[in-house]
Length: 384
Ligand SMILES: Cc1cc2nc3c(=O)[nH]c(=O)nc-3n(C[C@H](O)[C@H](O)[C@H](O)COP(=O)(O)OP(=O)(O)OC[C@H]3O[C@@H](n4cnc5c(N)ncnc54)[C@H](O)[C@@H]3O)c2cc1C
Image (tube, rainbow, N blue to C red; front, side, top):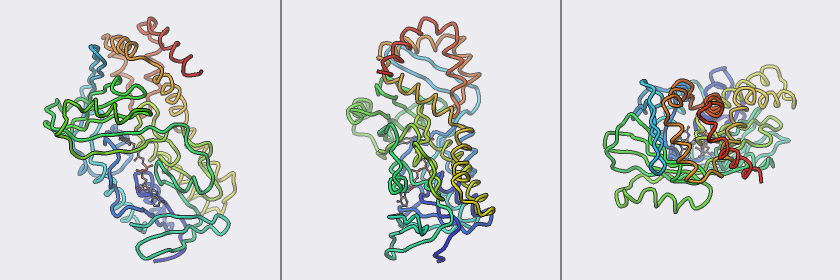
């Protein structure tokens, strides 16, 4: 194994494997290090990916468990169901999908080192300290891409302040006969975010929720009807709000490590891969042009901000407002969304990965006028 790499990627999730694949494919000597023994495990995801998110992963269909065409949003006795009449999202086995993404990176020439943790960094000598099954090791890099997930130790090591918010998520699989073509969303299951039931099979579903406070309690109430028949418990963290800075001297931070998940849904695969593509491109350009200046590094942050920075910023505003909406007001909002012309807007403009256009269309729709008072009230509370 070489001790000097042009690009070292820390973390073998979707963001890391994408960055490693692109850098290796362009001919750069690339190493991906992953602390786990298997890429993709343990799974910390509901596995719901929009069509475009799944396409961004550039994998076969082998990890696909189900496809969905619509959603049912339920709160109290209010329900809003909509259906696009075509596949809108894939339900995947994230372990299998991440594993395939890593294998494709390796097929493109990336070296992959499992059971290896990035434990320290010396920026002046551009050395990454690793601890693996063969003991400690030092690797030199020209560019380092930190895709080391929600608890990113690289960003901590280089002193970048943590994300603004951290969601905790809990999920399990249950035996549940459910229509397989709709995801069910339960905003009132978690007062700061929402709960979900995602069908993976005609008789099985993933049930879970994310929140900030009392997540365990909310989760045990939510899964009460399925008690004693739950399997595959998943727990995880989703940082939200993006880091204050996503680059440093020859270091680029992507995916959950940079808190890039969508604040409206917690989905982080799509943005993570988009950011990884920008990071890989900046790494390739910097090495080709021998330009590692701060201007070259900052071009990464400008690229991802131009791509999806607005989505995250608007999503964050909505996330803050959502936390101040009471259960009763949520029911009222869902009744408005269930009106036929509102449902038409949702099916026409709905985009899971870039929801800001839909949100703007809904908020400015005349049907929403009666709800402006309660949204305004929540907005003011969110600013206090
Ligand atoms: C309950 C739950 C449900 C979710 N559901 C969805 C969903 O349905 N759709 C969606 O798009 N997103 C979902 N997400 C979010 C999604 O899982 C993440 O946004 C996504 O995995 C981020 O990808 P990533 O590559 O940035 O990081 P990760 O997938 O977290 O990968 C980071 C990798 O880095 C490794 N690592 C960390 N530190 C080190 C180190 N020091 N050295 C070596 N390796 C290291 C980790 O082991 C890990 O493999 C969910 C999250 C949770 C918690």
